Length: 91
Image (cartoon, rainbow, N blue to C red; front, top):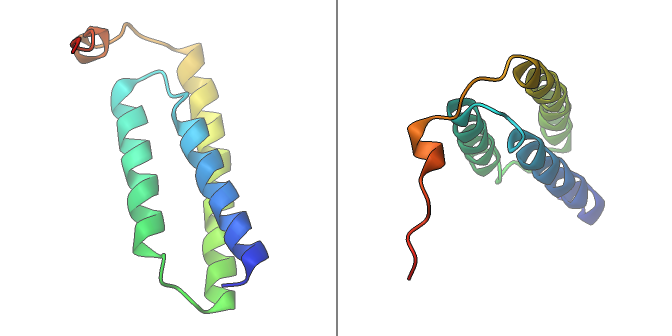
């Protein structure tokens, strides 16, 4: 993979993770982050430039979907789950 292509993929990966962290619902947030990581790991060994471009186009569409869903989720927010209100144990 060319250096510029690698940088674009990493930028897209970071943008998707960053945007997914804005989901107000814990379950959506954790699922989206897990699914993004799994999908990028699954395709990390792809070498074909055409296939890389197709995967990047799909990821860009998915990023748009994530952004829309985050906005919709913020309009109809709910109370936090019990698991989200837990304090981290002190060491």
